[in-house]
Image 1 (cartoon, rainbow, N blue to C red):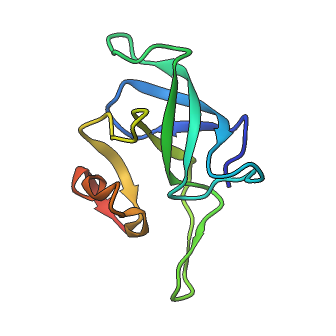
Image 2: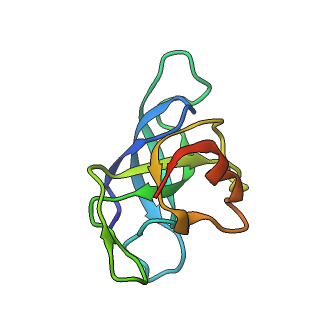
Length: 122
């Protein structure tokens, strides 16, 4: 579960390394975000030669959490880190590669490209 002030790793080749959640999107009373939710983030650290700079505000899609994810068949999947990928303001993916594994439940009409960019699908 991701809330405001949570530090997340970035698992794509956009140039950012660490981001901080500044707002959970999806309603005025929504305080926590889970896998597949969209949040607003601020870039804390980034690579030297990237278009993304420290302090910029982006949307991000959460792809891994330490809290875990319950599937309909009763299994629970947990990861070792909180991780996200950066999105443009019109919710298109910025990067061209995704590192690490992602869940197949993230696939939707908006993020169908996401499945083809990752190397591990759980």
